[in-house]
Amino acid sequence: MDNKNRPIGFFDSGVGGLSVLREALKVMPNEDYIYFGDSKNAPYGMKSAKEVRDLTFKAVEFLLNKGVKGIAIACNTATSAAVAELRTVYPDLPLVGIEPALKPAVELNNEGDILIMATAMTLKEEKFKRLMERYKERASIIPVPCPGLVEFIEEGKFQGEEIEDYLLNKINTYKKGKIAAIVLGCTHYPFIKKTLVKIVGEDVDIIDGGLGTAKELKRRLNEKGLLKNSNNSGSIEIVNSSNKKEIIDLSYSLLLD
Ligand code: DGL
Image (tube, rainbow, N blue to C red; front, top):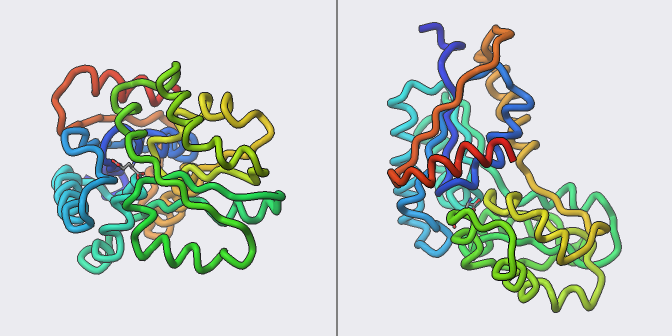
């Protein structure tokens, strides 16, 4: 098969990376995609970096065996734990990761604190420390670890009292001051954006890195001459380590969200 016609691989600890895939569908609608969600092992955010690294390598090998021409690690946690090493092991593979979109939040120059919601692991890792270092002089940045939030989303709970209480608990202290922006530093969180808006109000900018990551993936594939020449819309195959039908149904429905 012509390399250009091979599918693009996406990976996340569960259904979160679909928030990145849906952006990729906007910028590369003619491509074929294979999405691998590791819901059986989710959440990754509370595991050790070594465990997440090993699971990420396994997922990448799975996608490569499926014949993908490039991969998006559509998970901030897996990116922190494995992307640098993956680039060394697979130097020729077009590979993108995702990290909290702090730059656009800082560049808004809004008054107040920038809250970064992410998993405990993402906020603990070296990659995030370097990101903070780069921007800490330009803004007041507050990391907000959100253990338990991924679990709601994996269960398909995006609204309702339980999740509103959770978010209110997390955000209440900062609502007393001024919130400049909220960065969604976990790919699961864009799916609860509407509920978050209910808590913080329409005026707070809520930013995620999905579109930026999708564009970067397109750029890398283009650089290697790997974009498909076709005007037909492509196909999407969703594979999940949890064989539950509900997870597969949830995954397809999130793409339409
Ligand atoms: N979607 C993953 C991320 O972007 C969630 C990690 C988890 O499973 O805890 O960080």
